[in-house]
Image 1 (cartoon, one colour):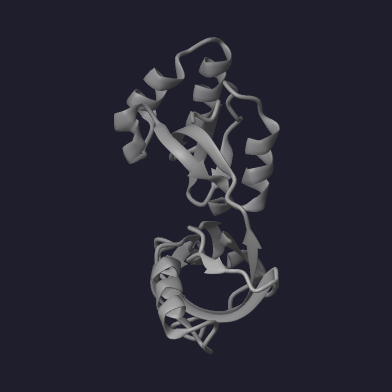
Image 2: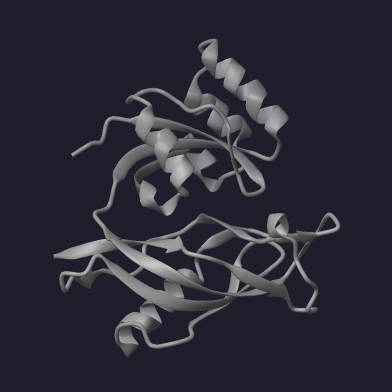
Length: 205
């Protein structure tokens, strides 16, 4: 059976390109990940890999590699391409975002996809997100708010994302999305540089 995969970081060590030491609270944090390529499970539920990557000032992965072969050349190549599409919060030193090299071992956990039908409103500031959340609580239309105020490209579709595998989000976001009912929306969630309000819908067949 083919399963989606989710990376769980065991520990993280990073240094900047300029070899400047970083404090723990300035390290990049994974905020959006697409699952790694499917793999026919051999009975194990975990796979250990060793990652090395360059995260740029915007939190994008400019370069990624598997330091040691993980499965086979084809899977390793697809995994590297997927990792290059991940999104991090950037490393920050003295208030300035910088590029950093990171190398860390991680566990690939085999898991079934968790699909939800979602919409989003993406805001640049917590103040705006809180204001829009208040409007929504008072009966404002989610679609209209998304069209007028969301920074995401999904604003063109009234914020609608369609079916999303929520395993791509950090665990704390997964918990919030799982806890709300169909038709409800979340309070603003701080994710990287942005604040996001999600709305959950009944999953269409």
